[in-house]
Image 1 (cartoon, rainbow, N blue to C red):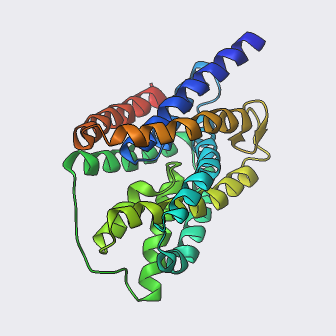
Image 2: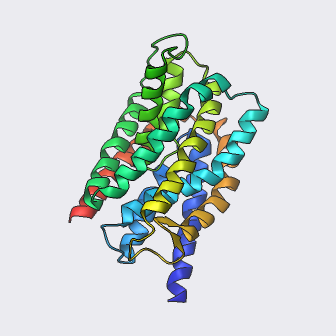
Length: 271
């Protein structure tokens, strides 16, 4: 049993290395790496398919909660965070995150896998096509519209266990924000998504049986601490490598990889 736990931790360390590198290299959420790997690991150890996607998504948010702190601080020092956007999106993002986590916790594992596959596939296709849309020179002034946009970003992000960068960065650039400001602001939004989502998944999974050892609700502490401890070290390395790499080509390769992963997850869940 102890040897199995050791293999479990080694697998997570490797996951942390690659999720950090991908996050730093391509600017996409490491959760898109963490969740499929955790799904396969838990499936390999014969945990119930009713709960493994819930655990994977909740634990991914736990990782993001930790890693977003350093990212947010780094962007704050570079003055890359648009405080006006954070103020206007704060309420919508937080409520969207809580609603998304409650909704995900209440549905069947099969449905959650399909939702993850569908939303992650849309993210992959947008990366593959490199879609850039310009809607306006700034975010809307309308309170309801701002909160509707931020609510959807928070909700969809929590449903697939990511920090929201895949949604908030394209949205902010569509509203005229420079890419560096969009990425920096997205890091702050990611924290606002991860924290309430993390707390909600802990609460909704508290009475669930059959979870991995050392879990707080749906959040597996070994997964969170192991992956986060490594990814915070490899993310800066990925960022440095990004200056030398052809990011457009790498994004397309990753997008194809993500599409294949989504198809594989759905097949693995149902067959």
